[in-house]
Length: 395
Image (cartoon, rainbow, N blue to C red; front, side):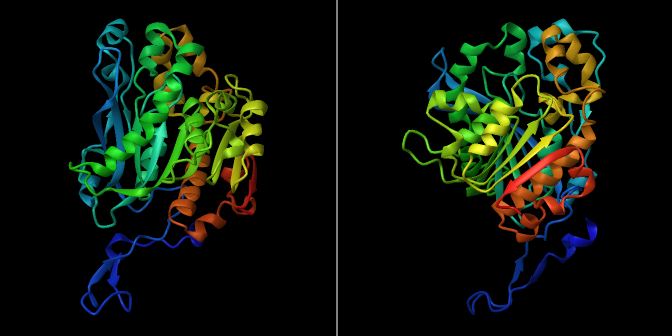
């Protein structure tokens, strides 16, 4: 891939603007955003990560308090971030006290990500397109941190909330059944534009980081269903036009009509990921049917040896002992996609990095080189061989 991508060093990203402005600004240096680099590798930017707690007073909880959301954000950072320690996630430290107390003595390793905690935002090329990520039922905001950090290195801001009431911790405490899932749907649908709007409106260290109307929805499982829903016409109302693309990974598309949505009402280009060995959601009924029903430009990556959770960082070997310690239900769930019987995590990440980065460059930056990279004939072998891939509009 390297020869077909023009890699521009950050030191060369400022050029004189000629004939593009008024006489007053003629000769001023204008920042030029880097040309896309190889989507399989890191982008041109260092990456920062930070955690926010947001409150939505318009949606009080059962105690009458504002709905509280813990949110993770990945963003392009200044070069100084390269010299800062790599950030780590430790699920034992993240767990609520009542759950952490039951896990004392469990051997687990904090998982490093290629990002620096609270690094300074790179403002040179801000504002950046926004990717809103929605985790699966009983998931966590950082369950796909490797992909999120990768996208930030390519010049996107990624924002991902814990959907309060529908996270791993609630799943462990009492389980999340059908009733809880149905109850969570409207709350999730409101969480996602809310967190993006707060990012746009912030007066904090990330002020000016986000574009106001150039967003993409991305999610896994239940979060993938939200990615579809928020980009579809709903009960005669057009979707939020700020969302311009969707990336659902193993969606539960059959739930959408229960709330007045449907894939045939999609209004944006969509990149769907499917798992041919999905043991949680039916591949044909949930994923193939979703792709077939979408009327817009679309691509479908059906990974042959993937299970439902192969698309997450939860399959990393460091988490397997902890998963078993969290209980039989959690351990069995992660068995749907994790382990030696399924695709290697790094191979899955190569597929995600290449396709998601190219798709978002094409749709949020209108980069024609990236759009061409989505054609079936353009895929590198390490991306193409593990999957069955088809497109409509990206040939």
